[in-house]
Image 1 (spheres, one colour):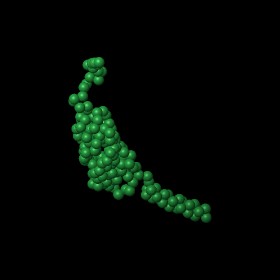
Image 2: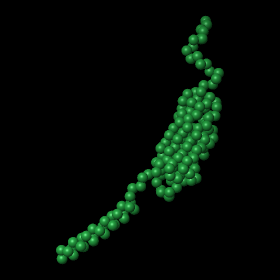
Image 3: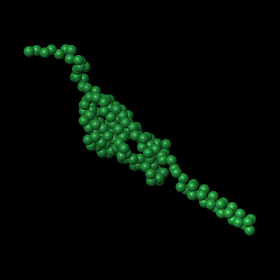
Image 4: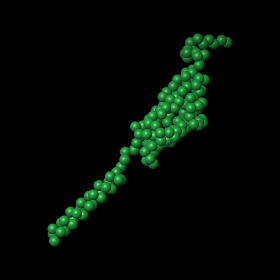
Length: 165
């Protein structure tokens, strides 16, 4: 009787171990895939159009993107290259399968100085694996340098200023 009870417990433990291994394999945590979105800086004179390259890349295939870029609308004006743009925000939508893709977005420089073009937190990247979770987006930013017009004086100490009465 003790042998039968011991054998039954052993068999039951074996069956439980098989089911446990099976369920752990099905429900094991999968590492979230990620995509990097980089923004290349640019430089131009006030009034010029500058091109800012935006690159999305991942080691996994991407099937769809919705990338929001933000910028200072008092320093830059959106011109072209994205699917839509308004004061301070640009949207790039893509429904193609790729691992790396670059798009050029054009802005007009409105004032001298440095300003940033950044990937906004609402950006989404979907993997082509059929997984319904979005990829983690590693967002970047780039600097656009607006140079003063060549007619502006480089003498900002006013050493040549003469006051007359």
